[in-house]
Image (cartoon, rainbow, N blue to C red):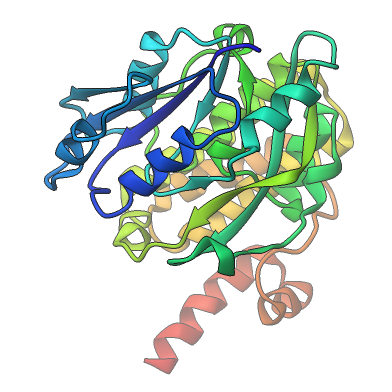
Length: 315
């Protein structure tokens, strides 16, 4: 069977990286290589990886504290026919790669494979799989549109990607700090012939407390999120232009505004202008039930302003 390269960016994950690597080494498909790229950590994760003795494992260090840069560096080192991008705190089921290879080998060239994922904190046996609408979708554009409109998502480790598709789609965008995985997989899916969901296996997504929620409100994060919206627009409209596509793209911009309002006013204005140029009517409502009710009464933009006024009153 084909060789699979598992690429893991490592940044301050000393507590979890051993379990992640163990799950890779335990794969029933034995023809793998594991490429760990440490990128500016301040913990002992690199030493943990170095202490693991297996010829299929290699570890590198770069100075850029950027997961996309680490993934791209690992990709340049990869020799496998298929690629898995795995986060340093996630865990693979033992049969993940074997089952995906079995299914994808029966498809024509140019297909990618994915699988279920489940959240856990400490014990994978406690993880619960919650099926999502996108899991059943094979058409690349339909997958993207459904995902954007609330139909679910995939964590990076779920995918098994033939190397030629990545060569065509391009590597991870190292400028992005937020939603870079979605932007990358949009390009990968659009470069593919289709996506097949492989049953009876899973990737475990670890819930880790961090300061990312605060970082995600920064100007850099907001700019990244808006650039991802722009990339979606450019990539998808090049392939297909339809009212449904434009509606999903406008929904992305509205979701951006909902997330970052009232900060980063210049970026919010750019998003609003982009929505106007898409010329979409009757966009689906966004946000919680109270915000949706408010939107029906006063409109989306007024609802954003009133939401902030309510927050100030409640303080």
